[in-house]
Length: 223
Image (cartoon, rainbow, N blue to C red; front, side, top):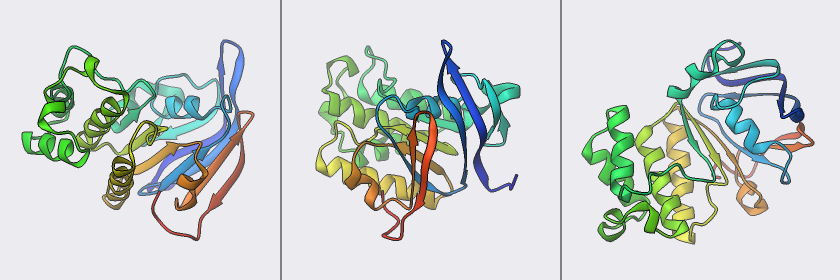
């Protein structure tokens, strides 16, 4: 496998409670790629992200993510991954800023990095000083994205990242994802929105836990 390949999956099967959520998935994603993952509910998109994040075990097949063999030690991939799920992963008793600062402390980011991330996501002082439990859905989403920006992971895994964001925040997120890939990070995100996929360089569609299509776009490089 080439050293510039961040995700390498071959005939991957993931069974959850006996149900094959992924049933023979094969594809690779290179360093610096931006890829959209589409498919109806229940096709395995979220499971695939969780597999790549080392959160669910590989049942069968081969999966190497960020140089880590998930069949051997899936926990070892976690320091290399930034995962944004539907639940955002925020601590409700911490303010928005404290949540981002918590991640910054874990990865050695600076106070300036925290301020920059909050500003990029449109989180003003009022929102930054509010407990996460009191934030709106959109504010929580933007806070979680700010934490992801601060993390600067090798691999970004985002589950419906545009959901709950207003138009301005969506545009800024698109820029953030482009900047991340330009810096060498790999980005894989799920979406139901056809318009969102239209400008993404590559789109993988899942159906029934398998890859139904893997298409490179000629339109542009933005998500």
